[in-house]
Each structure stands twice: as structure tokens, then as C-alpha cells.
Length: 241
Image (cartoon, rainbow, N blue to C red; front, side, top):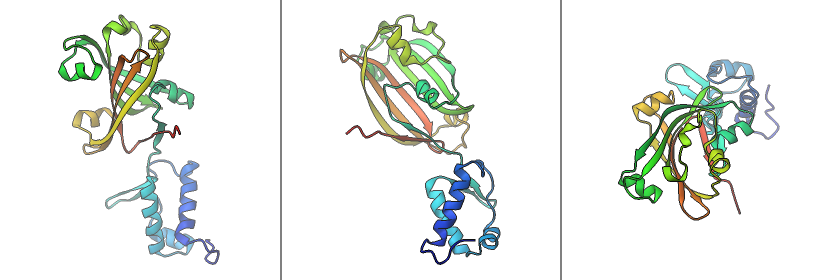
């Protein structure tokens, strides 16, 4: 039973109860929550109170509704600081997560005008293209297209990037000094191919991150185009002040 005389709104008390159950795993992702009627009876509260609590939890991304079916626990979003000089693989492993990559394409291509501008090289320059599906705890979490000037890392395709961090190879094997990166973030809708790779519904929001990494001589070593499922991923920029 909730405390109706303690000064804490009943909807806040219900939010605290449900949030705790979700965060501790008592309520697993995609578990259906009790109906409004069941919650009314269990906690002796009104439907108005329950609906307000549900609205807050939906806004927090902890639950979601399915038309005509009810309310369910949402998948926990993977949070990641936008730390451009820390590899995705290293970041996930540091958290104790199992991470792997499915190599969709690894090839040498010739830069078109757009890519040449991104890498600050001449058009038709040889460029390494590494197209990967990033997988965390068995869940597809990102599609990444990495482009690198071939002359800066000749022979790099001999490495197994299904498990090796690209940035580590650049630093340790090619002795390149990566000093800074610039990132652009925007929201978009996944196309059918992206939705399929990320195991998303056909119409799904994604976060698109475009990142350019620079060397100590101000040359560009890498341009990365990443696509993250907005419903499973939360990006934030650390405060460096």
C-alpha cells in the first residue's frame, strides 16, 4: 500500500516502485505490466494516478505501449559517452560487455568527390572501406562505415576487424598519433536495409554520427559514418570544462 498522507504524490510512489522493478531486472524487457485495473486493486489508487505514472515512465523510455495489447517494459538503452578517440570495442569491453563485429565489406575503393573532401585527399585516391555491424551482448547496436586513406595504413585489411579495435591497430601497428576528432550528430529514419541489419521495425528512428579523426600533423586518418538505433542507444557528450 502507498502512503497517502506522506506528502509524496501517489503517482510518484508508483513510478518509484515500477522503476525499481525494471532497474533490478524483476521486470525484464518486453514483460507486460499489470493492467490499470489490476494496479488499481493492488495499490488502491485511481486510474488517473496510474496513467500519469505510465506517461512519466514512457517519457523516461522505461516502458512502451502496444496498441490494443497493453504496456510493456522497454529494452534498456545502452549509454555511451561520445569519446571519439576511444574505440567502440574498447569502450564496451571496459564495461564488461561482450562485443563483436560482423564484417559486411572490407575493401580498397577509390574516393569519389564527396569522400575525397571528407578525407582531404585527391579524388580517385585509394581508400580503405570497412563496413561493420557492431554487436553488443548479441544485439546489433550500430552500423559503421569507416574510411581511411590507404597510403597511411597500407596492408591494414590483413587484420581481423571482427574482434580487433581499429584505433588500436592504427596506434600500435602503424604508430599513428591520433589527437582529436570532430563529430556531427543528427536524427533520421532508418532505410529498409538499415532496419533489417539492426533488427528494427520498418519505420524506426536512428541516430547518425559522422566523425572525422585527425593526426598530430592535422592530416585526416579516418572518416566514420555510424548509425545507431535511437530506441536502444543513448549518446551524450561529456562535459570537458
